[in-house]
Length: 315
Image (cartoon, rainbow, N blue to C red):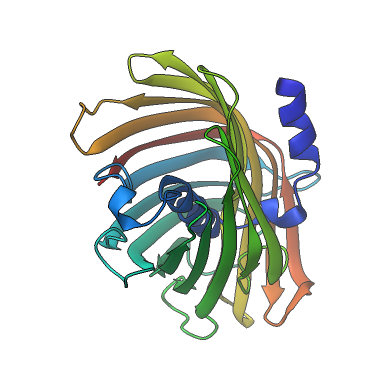
């Protein structure tokens, strides 16, 4: 089982180097499609669908490979649902919307020549979901986003697009395929998207959602534990002595995660999570806009401690 997980990791596209908010957008959109993969509105669950979460992430100080600089960061993330797909849309389609915000606090020493360490992301993902009579689902989503240090407005606004088709092969396996367009959010502007959810048996579950591959075991009494590998990071318009530039942080993270569902039957689903691991590889670049390959600065850092904790309410 773990061998299969490692094989899947090896064939994951370079898009694992996507920024955190984009990964979360794909994660949430994919998870929403999986939850809603039923026939038409009257069969949709009454609770446990809409994600609303608060998450804190910390990466300890990492020293530059072959250099004298170092970097660490804290990130605070919030997501709130704005529209319920079970009660919005038309007769044969559904509508979903949410508000997402991230604040990233960099702590750098040497190296990076940026003038502000506080970085912000705000986005409003909107999705149209079309269920099919065979249980499959079409999802088309757009997400206007703002990414900046707030000193710079130029190049801060982007429109991101996503289209996926979710196939429910059986009660234990479903997958989604599609395309995404996200300027500056990932390795490529246009990228293929693939996600799956596989209930291997009563205890074990494997999923690839957005840019997170996880293998989880149901321990009973609402407790689940497992391993994960995922891409983290972000990109922002920042101020430098030379003017506006693109700061891009990309990190590949792996570790152990624990989730505890402390909701009761019939209540809003509430899940607390704690992840502990390591940033295996981290790259930080300062680039000119319209030319990601024209890097003015490029830094690669040694592994650091990764800690993430959050609470997810699903209404």
